[in-house]
Length: 99
Image 1 (cartoon, rainbow, N blue to C red):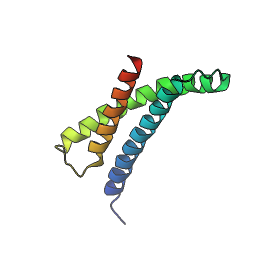
Image 2: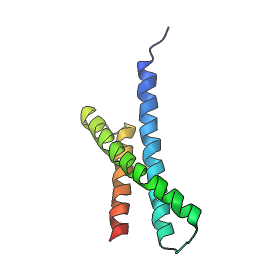
Image 3: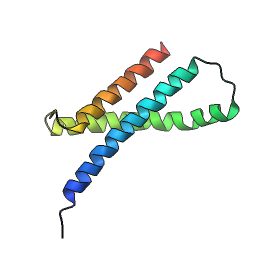
Image 4: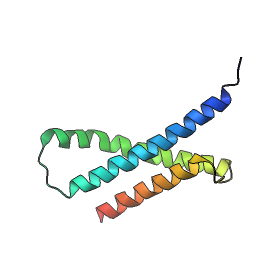
């Protein structure tokens, strides 16, 4: 039939990139919302529910994309480079927001 290895590679590549973008958007929104004193119980519960799993996801995505970058010898055309940069920007945002 066909070779699905290239399809799996593209799919994993895009999933890692989308996961990094989602983490960036979530933590940026969380940082912006933390400046406002919103006492909405439902919003606070959702934030508490999703923050720790997304921190773990961010760490996994960063390590995985760095591993793939080393494996691919940091090819500029790879979206793993973009994913790594987005993940590092997200980590910097989290560190700066805690200072």
